[in-house]
Length: 168
Image 1 (cartoon, rainbow, N blue to C red):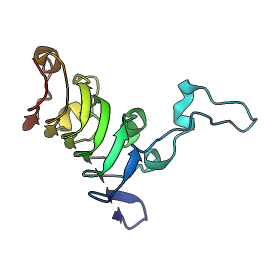
Image 2 (image 1 turned 45 degrees about the horizontal axis):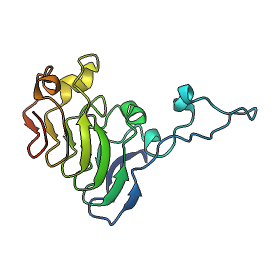
Image 3 (image 1 turned 90 degrees about the vertical axis):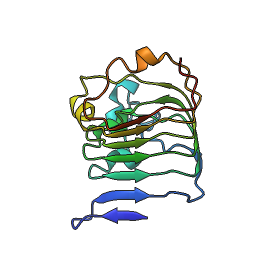
């Protein structure tokens, strides 16, 4: 279901095991035009955002146990400043995992999908680097070197699960 605060802002989306099928929700329109009818360039993606990317008070997103496919477009999610819990486990998602999906992320579950790589933790994303506590990317097909992946680990992480991948 959908949860809202007293002001009507969406704070939670729980569509776990809801028989969702298809591409992961798209956040930007590649064919957008501006006020004068001129196409908006890719570099101005923030002018074309819609859907989840506009839910600035979203704290919890649970899309687990569905049949979502494709890659996640992370760039618009970085603007969700209060998103603390992100669960897309048990889908058919692919591409890159980014544990630092939002600035205040505490819980991120990408397990049981078809992801092939993980973006390294980066310290310049200071808030998510400090806030992340739980991260699960188990049961994917990630083929990376453990030393590269774990070169920089968030200081407050309590549980990091990467089992059943092809990490060397």
